[in-house]
Image (cartoon, rainbow, N blue to C red; front, side, top):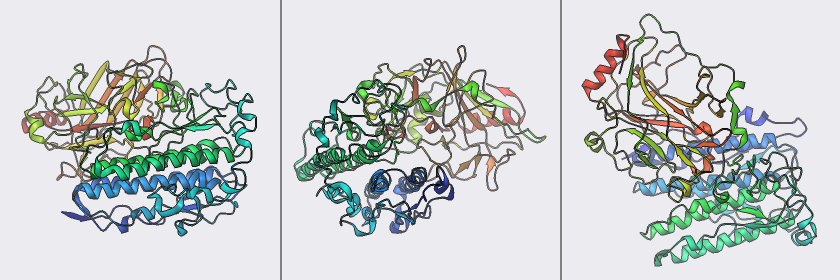
Length: 635
């Protein structure tokens, strides 16, 4: 079946007013970014592709919003091509990868992919008074740098980048590459390992250096005959991308602001490589072969033997702004850092992702329970995953897809949950819950950084940039609560709920980070540093208003919602038992732990989330409802 998509317009977005205003210095006028409409070019979207297409349309919107924030915050900075190289170029590459995923979603659903989507990747900056070159997305393959043909060939196949303004301005071979600055003391100025927060040599003023990228060819194995030509073409394209980036590097020595090398050279290179690597994977799939695993982890390159510029992806400790985390899947990679674990493969979190919980003011507000409210609670003991049941699937969001989460999940309750699970297989499985409840509860694992784990060389683990020792919670509390304004009704069997969002900037972010003894204050986008004697706590409050009809929805969200400020459910929804997961951990002191994420999400705490599939039968759910509505505390 096909459904007409009516979600996001993605149409010529000019950005929000706050994006245009935030960070503006008043010394230069910040333009706004406008991008071609995508949703109205899709036509009928197959039902099987709905969720993935909607997610990527939302991702396109968040990419534009983030680019506008960068644009507003960088007004007056950089050289002649700063906006193009540092903002529009990376935005184009991210959009190209996202548009390609939309095409793939159609193909996986057995439908004809929309044509011409790659031509919608390029955006423009309008009403610019800074004098910067803001790109010319309308002339496809003319001399506009990277903008040709929507990045289908990444603008590098024919070295199109050589004509982008100043690239051929005589600096390319002006002697800077070997001008004696390569070893002028900036290479190892003692600040390279100081968490990257300001090493005094950020302005690309030293050596041009050399860009080094992971080898791809030796990771491909046997290439199918039908894929040979396409794979070889893309391998050559990878080489030309590196060569062009090195030419840019040599010609730009001494230019730019604090993050010039990262924003103008390494970041765009990473995004181009990500798109090219994705085309290699597609070539294998079209030839009916297994695509090489985790090629996307090879997208990021680093600067060798040069001034790191506070952002080159080198071994600079926390690397507050080294920005190499994205792989073309929509992560902006602005502040990903490098903890120095696993030979520089790990990116994120960064010191700025942590805050002392004692500096946070109390902020937890609970609606007062009214006279007709339901006050009871029902707790379920399903253990702490002592049996170490892990996988990197997500049967709710990506059924049938191995490693669909690209991060490892902890599981309690149902012992069989994986990407192949069905309602029937889940009902037939065993459970870790003492009361026989076969429901499944799962969330991303938390890791102690700098320590080895069994999945260091597996998908979902190290191959997807999730490394460190998996921490088993010291306590897992699963509790169903009432509604402050009324009685609850039974939740249906097979109801699926996801709380939180695994994507930075995604809808309904609902992470809850706190510490024991400080649970009247919670953080969403920061990890708490707990004082000695206090333990880390993750709290997941699930949506508890149900539409009364559906056990799931295309985006896995619209069939349930959160109560309003007074605790009541919105019109058209009814209260069901409110599920809460509370996980308690002993973590290493300091900023030395992180939650698993998609590779491009940089281990940001705001991506924390938890999943639930209700498998209670009518009798079991009835006990939960009776307990809550009668005001008792039951186990």
